Image (cartoon, rainbow, N blue to C red; front, top):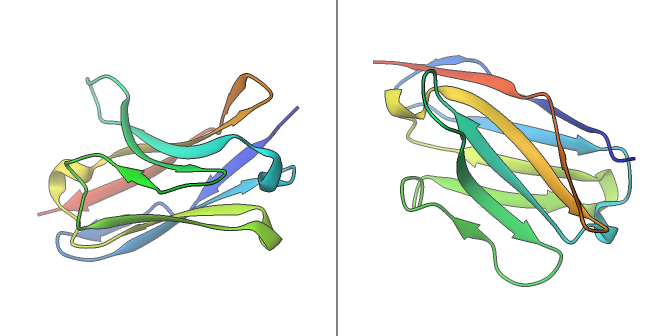
Length: 115
């Protein structure tokens, strides 16, 4: 069983930055991949970023050039650095992890960007 705990969500003004963290209960070295999704009010959950066990990271077009996904294996944590935030980035952000064929999700952290 994998547990994921997100943190770092906040209310910020447009143009500012936030860093979200996703702490995993197990060794993220053993995960096939980890990623971030977000869900805005009244909208479907959408993919934001993925960091595989090996290989290059991937980012949604809507966040390319502004967001970065990274990992700290020693701390079993994945980060989402969000710069130049826009009001349309407002959403609950969820972390996930693919391990042994099962996709695990965290509970989410709220990010609100005011104009």
